Length: 80
Image (cartoon, rainbow, N blue to C red; front, side, top):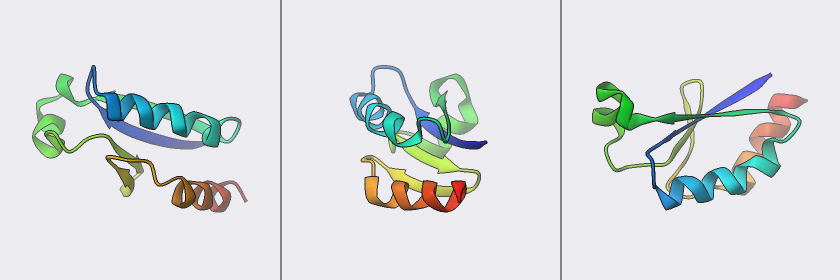
């Protein structure tokens, strides 16, 4: 199963928007793990305010705003 990781913080409207846009694209094809970077000092230093960041393993797929076209193509390749 494909797992996408979204690095986020509480009360981040861009993060909430990315999850809302991403959920229908991923439905039935994988899952989204939302990671609160404020709970991990290492992640907080790494990302700071540069969130949300969507990753698959070590590959950054989107930052700040969801690139729906890129994500759709990526999911198609992963689930083919």
